[in-house]
Image 1 (cartoon, rainbow, N blue to C red):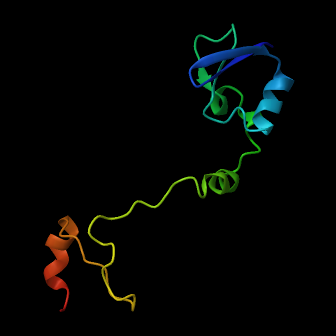
Image 2: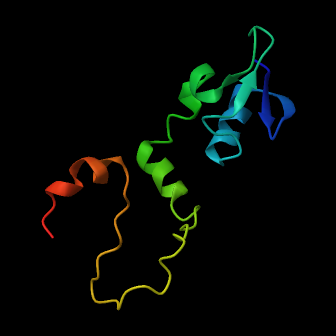
Image 3: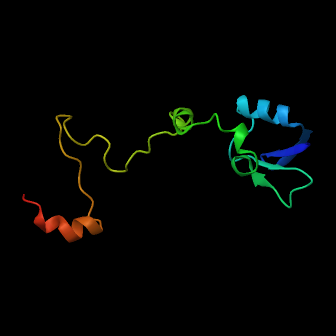
Length: 106
């Protein structure tokens, strides 16, 4: 069957089942990549249209690939505070703090 796949909004193909599986195994095509063939009414993600080609991607594999891809976001106003000896970070006055903050012993 001839498949088309979309990467960054551009359609590629046609490719056969075997080549589509190769693209998935080398991470060119992932579970969320949209694919289509002429018998389909519209584009669908790989995990829905051909789940067997992304079945090798377990949750652990996906988590491992995601590690290190995001940077820590600094919290404004906390840089340089504290003496580094386990000082507690300031608490926010969010809803939980307003509701239950009075119960906390000081």
